[in-house]
Length: 131
Image (cartoon, rainbow, N blue to C red; front, side, top):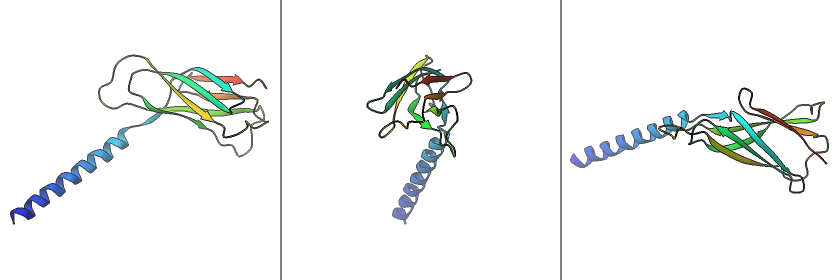
């Protein structure tokens, strides 16, 4: 009987730990980076690097997400969202930098004349591609 009670308590503890882990994962939110500082292209390698500024330390997993179009835009500007996962808990209260790379996985399509990187609010940067 005592062994059964111990197993039951261990199982309850594991379920509680799993529930806390799930709720913590749900609490972490991916947001647009507030300020885009720079955009750099390497046309030969087909890569783009974006650096931005976040209001505190602890932001993680910055990503550049390409906007998918049904029809390519007439202005030839490809839109991207620059996002990062917000920190949870206590973090340093200092403006920090985050950066991410985007790999075009081959040659940049000929119709693209530039990119527009979206942060939040006024955090948008447009850059023309010189070919």
